[in-house]
Length: 379
Image 1: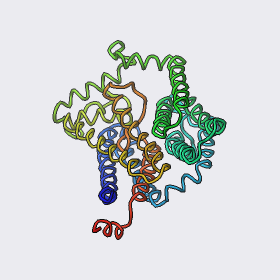
Image 2: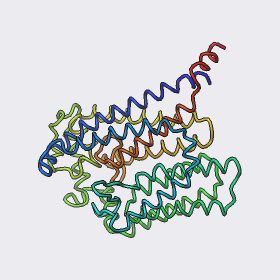
Image 3: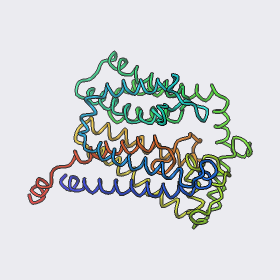
Image 4: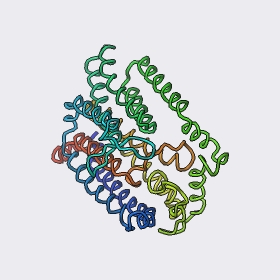
């Protein structure tokens, strides 16, 4: 037990070090991906990098600030957070706040500021669910309370789904199911939630033709190489061009408008082209180790709320990484999710750094002060 506590600060340093590495690597990859596009669209090759780096610095400050907030504070205001989340997501469907782009209304427009509330839901819904599960462990909730607490969550999920944003909705549902599973709630509740989620997913696929086409493109992208399968095939070609050592930083061709959305969803393909197999496997191993450290936090949590919260946030981060990398490599269907800390996407970057601040506070709170460590070690 003492050795585990002694290693808690080491975990903090490792997590922070990996975050900084990912941010720096992301800036390099983003500059390579957007220099030509920045000149063409905004007359500056630094247009995207300057905005992303400014957001990263703000995010690091927010991460540090949130890390100073005791995690139990979030439990106290969980209902207020959920209410605020409901208002923000609902506002994306209301003029003049909603902003339409890429065939969806996922953004709020407040003057020059664009923000994606569904990203924030990865934190607020997780906090709310963790608080409910912690209360259930202390004093089991009756079915009526489960329904009363579940209705606002389902409304938020429905509003995010309607934007439409199936990728974020799916991740949130999986995170909630994972939290339900580790908390040991009744199997009937878990099966019911799984059934609702499965029905919603099937409905989403059947409802829109373009989603069915995307699914078919995942199964066989070469069936429509100039249409729905174009992006996936170009991603494969980027990896193939990189071979073992890559073409070198800045020498990739996929960014020259051959691969759509290379700076967002498919930046890993550009990394594969310019850094080769060795670069991609190194980044993959670092992300794997990063997720291991995050899940390790939940095992060292000192109470049920911090355990559920850290597990849910860690699972959310791991799913974002897995879904993006899976879509780029063709293992999973493309879901339009950015690669955390690497891809262009300022809302996602800010939210992910805030998320990390909460996890860092849980790590610190799960440790004991140095004087106590020395005494226990001597004993």
